[in-house]
Length: 311
Image (cartoon, rainbow, N blue to C red; front, side):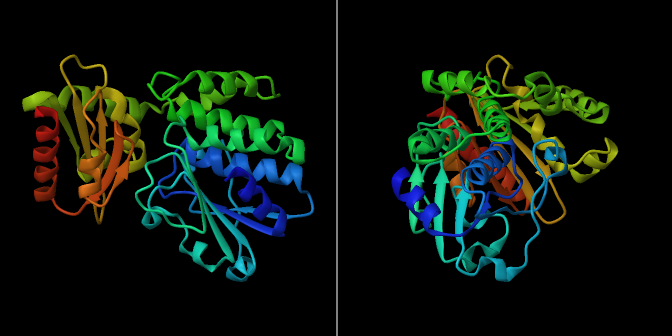
């Protein structure tokens, strides 16, 4: 599959790279890392990265703004996006060919070519593998690509704490740090937190609830977000805060927005992506998400999560 993807890249003069809505470091890292590899390898080609920018990730990369006609005869590559509905920028359909590169379960098999590896820690790890497989055919990895891919791997492994961090993951990270970028500066950008977010985290630790069967929940309403002068995206970053609570098997954050309620699910063992899928979401077995549209649905999510943990 990597060879087929490389052939498609070589056959197209325009390549437009997308990723999922509400991006995280792996979304930006894989999207931007692939773009930097292709720019270094094929300086004559037109390479674009698109989507709605996430302000908190500006330190990683800024994205391109392109007109619709740029998609004519273009190869479109979607990184780190399990479900077609979550692709950021619906113009991905306008390209000549579509490729999916992802590490989530392939429950929505969109695209003309699909490369999915659920054993990979991150899509950024897969992009590095793609570079390795093609470097004898001309692929080049520069410092900018290494920084982006390293950030994506660090982000999706929780700084290598999650079980998805394999020997291969550490080997790739060890190779990436030989490139010229400051890990100190990168970590500061990734993990420095504004005071208002720290105070919201304190609110979370004070107000979360533990329910039956080792389930914990946290509700963050629009009023709470406004009170702490934060955003739903910043509130979502706090979902790992309950991971150290003894006795908790799985937990959920409900984060209210104007038109929907974000559902962020995490687990220490029980497989919870089936719960997310039931509510038009998805993700990994131990980390998943969805969107719901009423607090009644939130009660249903809790009931489903408790049943999973009970079993």
